[in-house]
Amino acid sequence: MNQKLSEEILVARREIVRAQVERFHLFYYDFFHRAETIGMAKFFFETVYNLDGKEEWEALAFQTYDKVKNMLKEGTRESIERLMELNSITDALDIEMAKLLISKGWVFGNEINQEEYFQLFCELDKRDVRKKQLEVVLFNLKKFYELAHKPVSAYIIKPAAMMSRLLGVYPLFKKVEQGYYATLPVNQTLFEEFYDLVKVKEWDFLYKAFPTLKEEK
Image 1 (cartoon, rainbow, N blue to C red):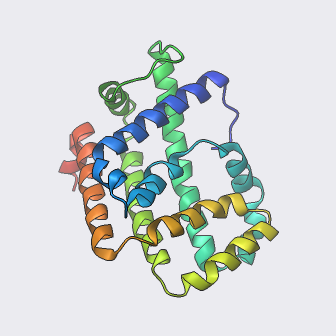
Image 2: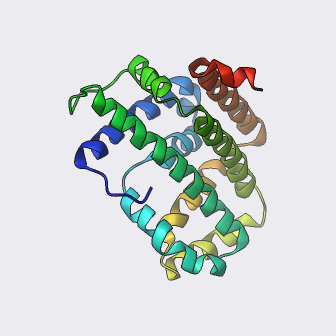
């Protein structure tokens, strides 16, 4: 989302993201507390949504990436572009929710609870965009796991990181690298348990917010 945002919106967006990450911790508590899955849960539900360094990340995505993407290997390029797509969708939604939160008279420093977050989520609507967002999330989950467990990935992850540094886009690749190492220790059975739970809970959350989505299935 390459736009200049006011400080008020930036702060409100951070609160929206905080509440969203809190929801993930509630929904996926077990995976945040199992030794084998802590890293994976933190990557998909914290790192991917982390706002720290976001301005640098977006500047590279919009100003530099197109100039160098053809110099990256296809797998590296696809992984970066999937994250860029998710970032773009999520950021647009978070900014709109932040604006809605401000319009409700939100006071800086006040934390919203999960009921208030859900009310904002429903009122903003954007059900079709939310559906697309979830589809991208689920796609990314599988693709990151597959990347980490391809034997060849062990040999290309470090050279890919080095190349991205040389091209000046390492902050874009860094999240791919983090995802690789976060999912690497997780066996297939455990990952499938995680994926299936995320799929069920996130679709149920959307259907609760927007019942017509379920009717359209």
